[in-house]
Image (cartoon, rainbow, N blue to C red; front, side, top):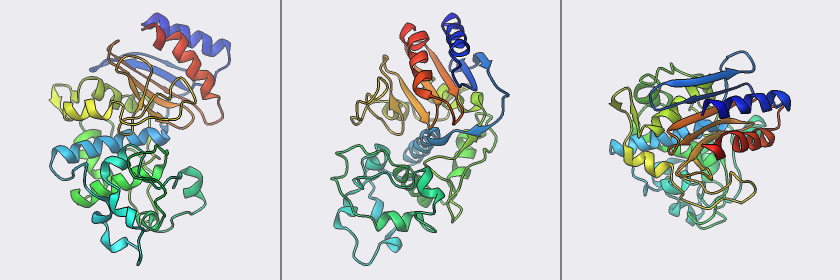
Length: 302
């Protein structure tokens, strides 16, 4: 395995691929790491969504939420005067699979930067038209994960960051990460978390180990299996677009999935090989080329 990773490093250097770092670990410890740049925390973008899925899994285990809970029932005070009747069909499980039915990408990076949804993201989304039948069509949208995170907050009675800190961040030794918040101060369930590579990868290690960390069962093994299994089809626009679970993308390797953030903030969970492999890349790179190199030099060989 180390040989394959080192082959990737040589190819990255030879082809001038824009990679900041790559690391591999099993469910208990770091096995190998190579840095191309200084090791500093960076925005992991939509890799954050997999942490939101983890928060949902915890809340399900604690009996706070159910996957069949309806979005509109959580926020009746934020519904418009004449809401789209289809809003009542959107359930938490639909948000987790990017199949809410809103039918368009909402509250993505560029949308939030220009002020879309200001100041209340939930009220803004509940005023949108539901274009598709919930649960049927995959449309990648950060709004779905933002709404899922707010549903957890509503039942947990604390911010998503505090909820995850006590149950995940602190036990994993990740500290309290910097995290983009909405104009009202709620952590962005769709992105904006800042972490070092090996801290980001710990979520993959947790899932690789069936939710266990250093002897403690932090996450229900049943949730680990469900979140990382294919729930809905995705557009077949690359070798890596082979379906979606609960804020985890499927990978074309046995039982494998990944947490995936923009520009190449990726943790691949590879149960057959017994490892998690994580990379972080800069915003000005070509992640398609990095992805091809990872496939050819590492993943397809394991």
